Image 1 (cartoon, rainbow, N blue to C red):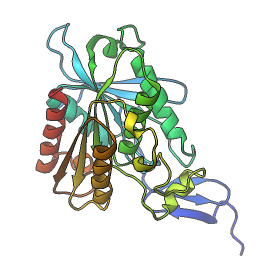
Image 2 (image 1 turned 120 degrees about the horizontal axis):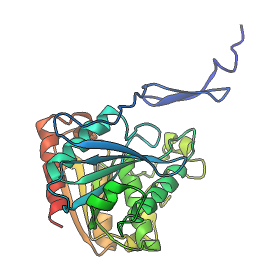
Image 3 (image 1 turned 180 degrees about the vertical axis):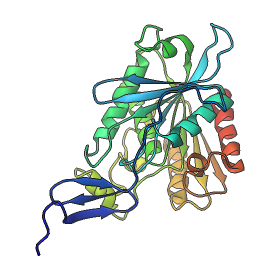
Image 4 (image 1 turned 120 degrees about the vertical axis):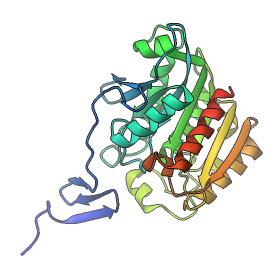
Amino acid sequence: MELSASEVVTHEFPPYFRVYKDGRIERFKKFTPVPVTVEPKTGVEIGDVTISPEIGARIFKPKIDGPDQKLPLVVHYHGGAFCVGSPFDATTLVFLSSLASEARVIALSVDYRLAPEHKLPIAYDDSWSAFRWISTHSNGNGPNPWLNKYADFDRVFLMGESAGANIAQQVAVKAGSVGLDGFRIHGLIMAHPYFADHEPDKLIQFLYPESSGTEDDPRLNPKSDPDLAKMGCLKVLVCVADKDWLKPRGVTYCGTLKSIWKGDVELVETEGTHCFHVFNPSSEEAGLLRQRFGSFINQA
């Protein structure tokens, strides 16, 4: 008996998703959003914002000491191979509420559209649009009251893990190339960054049909980006883990930056697997890495 188009699998990329002949996409892991709340362990207040009809974000605000206190702003791009992950899930909530409380920062995580429903480079475009929206708050007159009142736009940091680190790096480069009125990015935190290699990445080729999926694509590998030297921040922290298969690419990225870019670059290696600080935030190693993030931010 011949299978129907709704039953025939044309592509499968574990552990992320499979695609059927009729175009239906089945994700292997179901996502359940966590409603806005006050996180009980940290007292961090959580709020959601709509940036555009296509783009949202979640903001994490720690307890504020007085009406005039301004805190560093961390703009976060989540990982997940450009095709999974969310600012609104429990994993991101625990990680960013802990960081906001411990490092004393306002954290905003961008909900860029995911592939393969929205093919790359849409995730990059959404992330840049979100950052431009954030920049409208630098004079205290943007649409979000928390950013207007509590964010210190002299201390803005970009942050991402895995694919999110790739996106954060691209936003920093574009900010330096195009420029933004009102503020400059102070620092960039790259945790276990994903960059392409010389071998084609089959998943990326499917998610990004315009790309070769290799290191010659400037979005996928900074050493191919002619604008890398213009990256618009003052310092970069690159974090790698000893058991992460992406560790060599993070180390190479660090070396590339040092040879091309004039800002300060620091490489930190820890024990652990890929994105352990997000997936196991209660571990001792994750706590130590968050302390390192906080130190990097508050040295500004």
